[in-house]
Length: 99
Length: 498
Image (cartoon, rainbow over all chains, first blue to last red; front, side):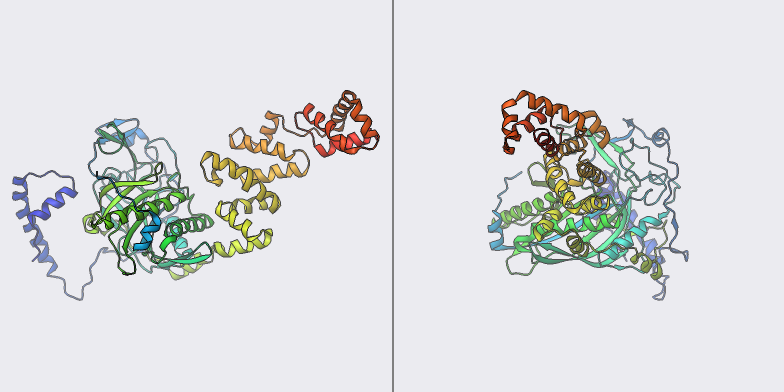
C-alpha cells in the first residue's frame, strides 16, 4: 500500500505554491492517504497482461498543417486577467525562479 | 554570499578532469506555434499572438504542428541520431506564471530523437560529442519583473507576462557527458555549439539567433579528481547566449568548482546565472529533482509514430554535412587552409557562399566579409551575419566596383552606410554622392584645371617624367572629392600632356 507522509504533502504544497499551516497539513495528509488507497485498489484490478495505457484511442500522428489561424485580440486575451499593465498579465511577485 | 576562490585554469587541470553536458534549446522557425495556429514570429506587440490553447484556457485542446515534427526528425537525422518509432508528449508540471497552463508540454522518457553524435574539430583535433536525445517541447512566455532595487527577480514587487512566446516550438538537444576534453573543454563546448548552429542553419529549421534567444545553451559542468574516472557534482549554468559566453562559462565554472573542491567543500547542485558583462556566474535555484516535475503522459495528444517511409523521405532532404561542404567550398574557392579556417571562425562561410552565388568572385567576397564587414561587426559587438549587410548587397557593390562605378574606397563608404541602416545600395550611393566621376568630360575639366594650376609639374611630365603625374592626380582626386578612378585620371593626364 503506498503511503504519503506529512513531509511529502508539505513538499507537494511547496511545489504547488500553496501555503499550508501545520494544522492544515495534519488535516490533509491523512485525507490524501485515503485517496491514494482508493486509487491503489483500482491498480489491483489490472493483471500483468494489461499494459499501462495513457491513451485509450488507437490513434497516432494527429497533426495540423503549419498554417496561421487568427489569434485573440489582446483585449480578449486579457479580459479574464485580474490585473493588467502594459498589455501584459500582471502577476504577484514570484518566489523561486524561471524553469 | 561567500567570496569565491577562483583557481587559475592551468592549475585546475593539474588536479581535476572536467566533464561537461550541453543542453541547447532551439526555437523552430515554423509559421505557427507547436500546438496551436498562433503565429510563431518574434517581436509582436505583447499578447497579440495568443489563443485559448496557448493561454491554457479551460476546454482548449492542443494539436501538434506537423512541420515542427518534421523539423525535429530532420534535426535528429542531421545529428546522426535514431528516430523513435513511437513516442509521447508529457506534461512537465510546475507553477510559475511563464506557463499559463501550470505545465509545459514536453517529452520525458520517450524523446523523438536518441543516440546521435556530432564531430567537432578543435585546433586540429576531432572530438566526438555524443548526443543522448533531442525532444520536442514548447517555449514559455516572457516575464518582466517590475520594482525591486535591481529589477532582478529577487525584490521584484510584481511581474508582467507576455505569452506571445508561449507555445513556440522548441527542440532541446542534450549531449551525454563530454569527457576527456581536458584543457580544451571550453573550446570543445564552443565548437560544439558552433557546429550545431551551422547544422541548424543549413537545415533551415531555425533562425538560430543566440542574441535573440532563438538558440540558448545551458552548460552543465563538473570536476572530478584527475584520473579518478568519476563524475562529480554538477552545476547548470543557464541561458548562455553567445558562442563566446559558452567558452567563458565553462572556463569560469571550472575555476570556481576547483576553488570549492580544493577547500575540501562540496559542490552544491544548483542552477547558475551567467553574466555576460563579467564572465562570471551567480547562484540560481537549487536544481529540482525530475520527480518534482511529476511528469506524466500528455492525455490530450496522441502518440507520434513517424513511419519509416517518412523518416527516409526526410533523410533525402538533408543538406550536405557541414564538414564535407567546407572541404568542397574551400576547393571551389581556392582558399588556403588558413584563409578557410579564418572564414569559418568568423562565421563567414555561408555568407561568402551566398555572395558568390549572387555573382561575386570568391576572392572579392572574402575581402569584404573578412575585412570591412568583420571590422564593422566587431565594432558593434554583433555576429557577422547580423552586421546589417546581406550577401546580395555585397555582390551588388562588388559588381559596381568591377564596372568601375565605385572604387574600393567608395565601396567601403557604401558598406558604412549599409551598416548604419541608411537604405539600399543605390540609395546610399545617391544620398552620399558616391558614384565615381567616370564621365571623361567632367574628369577632363578637372584635369585641365589641375594642369593649369601646376604648370611646372605639367612641364616635367611633358618632358617624360611620368612619376610627376602623382601631384596632378592628387589634385584631381581632391577636386572630385575622391570619387574619380585614379587610374583613369592618370591616363587622361598622360594623354593631355603627351
